Every structure is written in C-alpha cells, then in structure tokens.
Amino acid sequence: MTKIDILLGLQWGDEGKGKIVDALTPDYNAVARFQGGPNAGHTLEFNNQKYILHTIPSGIFHTDKLNIIGNGVVLDPSVFLEEVNTLRPVLPDIERNLVISSRAHLILPTHRLLDAAYEKVKGVMKIGSTLKGIGPAYTDKTARLGLRIGDILRDDFRDLYYSKKSDHFKILESLSFTIDEDFEQMETEWFDGIELLKRFRIENSEYLINGLSAKGSKILAEGAQGTMLDIDFGSYPFVTSSNTVSAGACSGMGIAPGLIGEVYGIFKAYCTRVGSGPFPTEQINTTGERLRMQGHEFGATTGRPRRCGWLDLPALKYSIMINGVTRLFMTKSDVMSGFETIRVCRKYRINGIETDQLPYDHSMEIEPVYTNYPGWSEDISKLKSYDELPENLKSYIGIIEKETGVPVAIVSVGPDRSETIYRD
Image 1: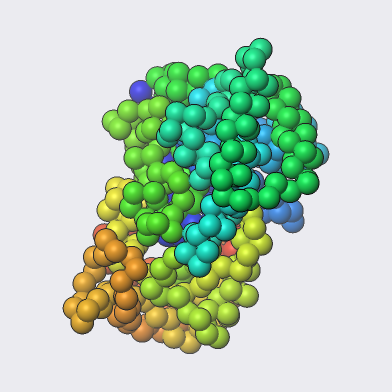
Image 2: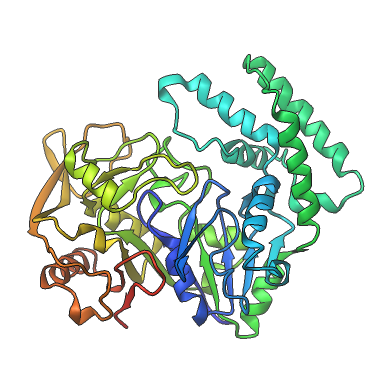
C-alpha cells in the first residue's frame, strides 16, 4: 500500500491550498478532496488566467490525473453545475477524470434557507456563515436525516427530496423565516445540477482510493478551510462544520490512519480570517489595511474583505501538533515585501500570565506578546531559487523553523503556479 499524503491549511483558511495542490499534482496519480463544501474557494492562476474552485479538487487542470470528491464533502448540485460550466471551455471532458463518492451528502436548497434563518436568530452572536447551507447539511448528516449522492440514482429520489423539503419548511416556519420568491428558481437550478451529476462517475470512492493505494498509485488528499476552523479543535463556536485536520482525511476518504504519509501544512507569512470569531493578532489599523490590499485579501467565495494580522506562532504550533505536520509550505511571502518591521506573536498573555497554549475558551481576552524582526523591501515575485531570497526573509523562515521544529519546504512568492520556490 502506497502512503497517502495530506495537504491542509494551518490557520483560519485562505492559506493558498489550491495553488499548492495544483503545483504538486504532477507528482501524484490522484487528488482527493476529503471535507467541506462550496464555502471553500481555491484560487488557481496560470497562463494569465484565474480559476476559482469550490467543490472540485484542485488537481483537475492536470487532465491525466484522477480527481475524487470524497465522502466527507457536502455538495450543492447547483454550485457544482455552475462550476462545471465555468470550467467546460478549458476542460471539455471533465467527466473523464472526476469521480464523486456515492456517500457524499447533498446540500439542499432549503439548507441554504436554514443557514440564513439560523444566522438571523443568533443576531449579534452570528457565526459569520457563508450562507451556503454547509452547517445545516452537516447537521442533517449527523442527525441521520441527509440525502446522499448515491440517492440521486434511486427511482424515488424526488419523493425523498420533497419529504426533506417539507420538514425543512416546517422548521423555517417555526423560525418565522420568509421564503424568498426566488426559491422556485433556486430549486430548478438544483435539479439541473442533479441531472449533471448523473453524467459523472458515482461510486464507492473508499474502494477506489484504497485500491489505487494498493496498486502503488500516489494520492494527495486536499482539505478545505483551515485547522483553526475545525469543529473540534478550532475557535469554537466560530468554526466550520467538519473536521479540517489530518484525522478528517481518514473519515473523509475511508482510509486507515496507517495509510497517512506526509502531512503538508500550508500557512501564510501573516494571518487572515473571514467572518466572526477571535483573532488575537488582528490589525484593525493601517497595517491590516495594507496587508489586505497588497495581498488582495477578499474572499474567493463571498468577496468579503478578510481580517488581517501578524503571524501567530502559538496557533501555528498548535495546528502543527494536532495535524502531525511533516513539511511546512509558506505562502504570500511576497505580500510582506516593503514592511520595514515585521511583528510575530511568540506568546499570549492571558490574565497577566504568559503562555504559548491556546485557551479552551476563545472568548477570553488574549493579549499577543510580539517580537519585532527586520523586514525586506525587495520584489521577490520573480525569484526562482531559495538562495536568491532576501537575507531577512530567510531569517524570518529560520525563526519559524526553529520555533516549530518543522522545515519550510516551499516558499510561494506569487499567485501563479510558476511563482513557487522548492527547497528540496
């Protein structure tokens, strides 16, 4: 059995996973997405074109590689339809190298309504949901009330759907939520997506993945969101609805823990976050705005401006521990060019006591304890080797490696797949 490598985000998402998966795909036979839904927005740039993927794995542009949507994913057929239609001009035979797990759960149109209704009820305590129906879909999955991809092949599928719709409407009525008149159009597009799904390979992907591994094929597992949004280990309750950590790859693809090989952890040279929730190193000032504008920090899925701040080492080390990271990949290092001084949070101060551990209660007042380091002014976007990087940037990387005990194997110096420096 060939080990399966995992690539995931170590912060609050948006670390640049899509670009790195795309860059690594030539070394693999298959790429499998193991969790999350269309709230993910993986941006890929090459040949002066930009593509944003929401559900489809980021290896899809390598047409000689197999891409798999695993059982841990929740899929919205209408979003999938739009995504495929967008890709069709460059991937006319996309059905040929994309497989969808029969066990992946469906996001229903009413799940999106429930998402909006629940956020409205929470008021000022809202999570900051993308309103894509992710949470309600996972709720139904856990409650054993969901519909799965395999169900669309049943003769009574529409009956199953309308039964679930009726149940959801009762909940919406109890929440005094008004059904928008556009719902009928939303439902029509959803069923159009269902018909498109039937044209793809729908199978028990756990057999496929384990079979490929048994034959010696190399598989890269792709996560969505980030470790600090994990339902168990993130900044609860301001988290996503699935396990974004490496252990989630086992349940999200149907593989044994012993099959996990390398665990690649991606992090930005700074930090960002979308939505509500704690963010100790957030800079609500000109520094934060400068990072946002230089890094084009606006959500790929929602367009919302991202909150920006300095690198948080306690959170990064926590993520490395939880995931068992073996290699670090640093992205957006080019965004830091021009900062005379770069600050790094080395510890937290909570109730007057310094610690490098994340508190259970993320609502506690956390004061970051910073150390300042000299920045660099050079434009690094066209550099091709590690030796060419500014000395202060290499020192910055060295500090991260010393603090975490994990080597930084890739340094991204721009959004294009070619703007990637490999150290080994």
